[in-house]
Image 1: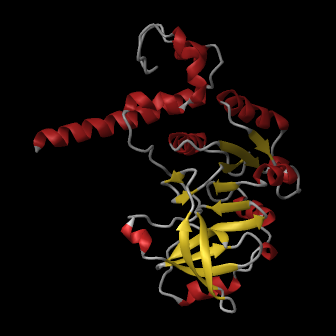
Image 2: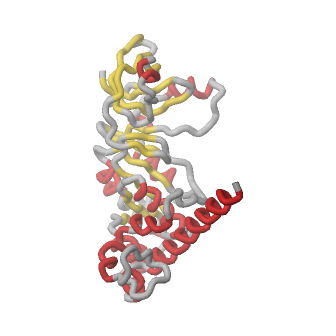
Length: 300
């Protein structure tokens, strides 16, 4: 049979059959010999060892389309990042950090702003004007008033989606709407996990409907830009690319150089000022970490 790993814990892998049933599986020893560890999100071939107890064995891990580091999951199609339009006001620095992380892993990101019932349309247009020119689809919803939710359901249909966002933005309510509990028989599995010694929050996919899975990641309040050469950070801001041909210097990093096409575009309002200011902050963070590593290497 074929299925998808939706959770892995303590050497057990819980495989959804794509319909309604979850099997508790062990992975064959051949994977250790290949130095390959099953991941949440892996499509697998598995054998049923005991149908009544829903127990099985993973025989083969099918080729992965991709593999994310944070969160640890494979075969993801998109990230849906949720913030509130207001209450709390969106932390755009945190949002940009998340977008940079997704860009660095090559994963398309979609932005969803909740709580439209609490803000005027002008606020929505301000947010759209920041992110739409960067190429990110932007959706506005009200979970409270059940507006715009069917658009999100269509957006995730047939895909595996990572859902992320800070606390207090209505992410749990949106998750509950998109992931009806009746769609997955996990009571027995959850009970087994609760009886164990493991209380750490693990990556877990939820079955929504045929071909559709979601991963709800914990709320986050801070995030470091992942380690990389500072001069490559500009590649993670897609709206910069069209203006780089107007830069005077080859390899311009758009920080302090003269005749910089990107900085001119910011002044002209063609690139969001908040996006650019966050870029400068992330660049400085990477530069400082690079200098600390350099100094530490000299001391040794």
